[in-house]
Image (tube, rainbow, N blue to C red; front, side):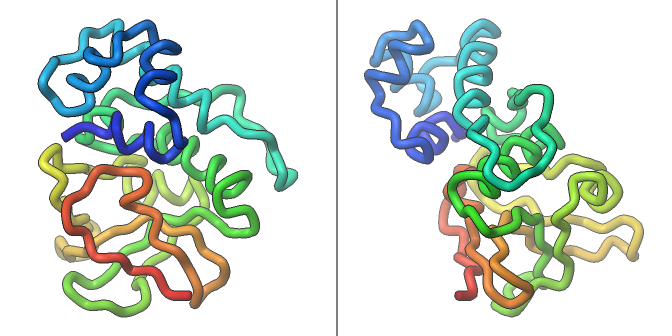
Length: 187
């Protein structure tokens, strides 16, 4: 499944409003969201620009605002997250949805509900830690992170809104389509 419906729900947009803004019919958009219709390049571009604009919110944290926001088709298709996608998410989380929190990519030991073993909040560090890309599975299952630098260590990963080192909200499923992904939030 792609992330089109997940994004529409994240921003609280109706099917009608989203379809109208992106020059689609509600039937077309509904079929695109449920993989009943394969999007054209024009559809992908229009939807990527539309959702990127929604991630671009007012700066409330005195951060340097990015020049522009761009979402990847990889993200929309639910096959991967690029550094641009993570930048848009970080900006949105820290300036709107979880004001006062820090956006992070975190690694957890598989099948263990414990604190993360690794937390990365800096985008530059995400390039080093994850090559600026996280693999997603189109079917909504977890594609674990394999750390080739550390003997192919396997970890589950999550996107978090960190209040502090021990309190965070797992926001992964609000940003990405997953089926049955356990919530790792610690309040």
